[in-house]
Length: 328
Image 1: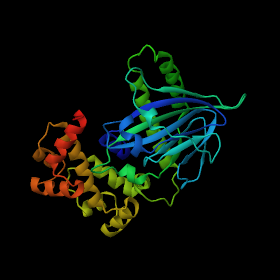
Image 2: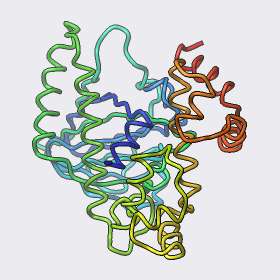
Image 3: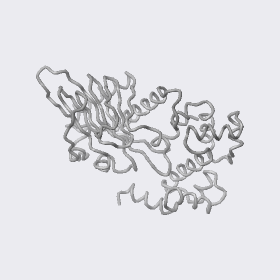
Image 4: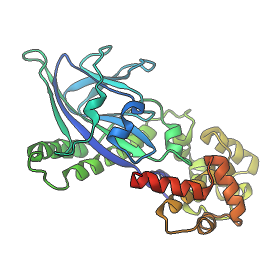
């Protein structure tokens, strides 16, 4: 079981590429916070992440409040803002842009991405970068969101970068003719690059790192996560999981909790609720069927656990999410 892939599928990652920017120095673009524009760019998901990919040249990225240091970017780099912070891409650190939430309305009369040219000074070095968004579920449980820092900086493969540049050129050329499928192709490529960036982020974590991502990489904790994700409905106990990864009960609980920040059985319970929530949203299973499918022996116990974690009864959650998907 590939735990990262399992989580990404369960939280329904979706992408959208909004801007293809060709900028000459000096320049600064400021993306508003997701609180201000999230529903404009991706109306369905519970949570929206902004990202930028540099395809040519160099630039700098930072969170608007400057709580994190500025990050130097070059061609092939991706920067992700998982918490939805307002952020800046600029030709030099410390610059500010002028945010314009109105620019983030999805167009009705043409396809994405918007093509933006910033002239800069005569003869200035030019930078090309892509700005987009990724939507995902945040509830009942998305361990990836909790584990990521406010700013993730990681490379993407040269092959992906070439695909992006080529597809952007094609999308811009075809924007006036509404060529079918270009938005979807770019959106899927954005999702792929995000996965690449997260994999590279995991690989570059220091040996002493803790958190869910470091746990995925750890031999014992990662093995336990694979067992739980591979057979979530199994009647797991701490003893069985500890035995499955070759550890004593006490050592296993201590190690798992140190990495994942919650005990193993609490993690399993929350992951089961995430899976059940996705089943309920399809409208094809009953609450009883969803509870059984994720390992609950009692529908009443499932209802209590779901309401305790989500704040809503499973049936109420299903009706509310159904209305959200239909836009009513």
